[in-house]
Length: 357
Ligand SMILES: Cc1ncc(COP(=O)(O)O)c(C=O)c1O
Image 1 (cartoon, protein in one colour):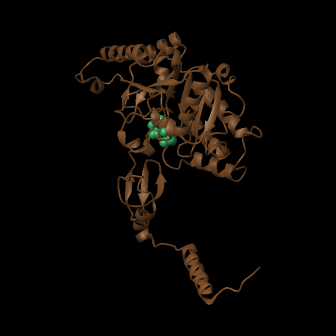
Image 2: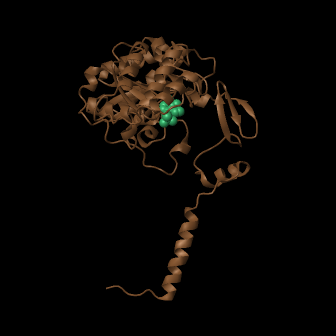
Image 3: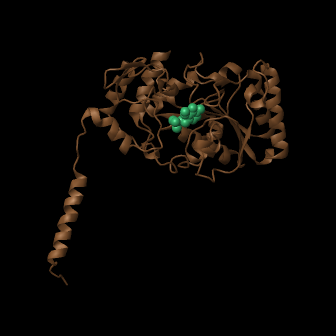
């Protein structure tokens, strides 16, 4: 039964409507006030080094709305390896954008995904790495690698490095040990993570002049203790390592250290996960730093330089291992998974890799 609204409720309704309508108005903030607008409306959880609004990127420089031109030493923290807005990358992305934006990867293959793999295969640090999976961000690729390690070994615990940075999603954060701020207030983090010291003099409280062989021996001894005292090999699925420790100090791992990790993994049926999200794609002089040690990763994680600024990450492993994953198991559980196959990202990377070779 309908009742006639009272004049008060009609007024209230009008007030509500006008408030709602005001809220829905799109206002265009003048450029000079956009900084303040950003301070107000962008989450406090993001940090910024400087004030200003970047309007353009070209090569090694970024330009600001107030006319400043700055040399971008951050390079997107290891992202824009070919420089900002590389013409070939941007052109390839634009062309793909006009062709097919979203090819749902659980429906069928699409060409750029496969062409990217063709390009990446010769760049792999070991020829055994031949089975790929692409995602959006480095953290998501780390999540995938952690899940794979658990599924493929049937074991749960994971050893990571003191000082490591692997991202800020929950699993990745569980193996990130570079700063407490990332985990403050969000505990409990993913359980079953065991940090060991990286061969970095600072972590061992040794003089900076300590040789890499001594540092390696110290670290591997601690790994030995960890496996004897805290996480049994029968319960440990993997060791995850940045071969160049990033945020924890920018320290390249000595070759003997990576070889030592490989030996321990082989001995105990554990997987060696190498995270080259930051140091991969030519930043150390080879496609991937790990190849300089001759060490074969079981799982290699890549992102950042892979697409020179477009959001693309990847996990590569051996077909023999990835064949054990149930079809569909790697797609369904990640928030952005529906979008993981944006072909333009893939194609843009293709241009990037072509340029790099
Ligand atoms: C080594 C490493 N792994 C993972 C990540 C996380 O990548 P993303 O920020 O794309 O999630 C980063 C990011 O800096 C990184 O340096």
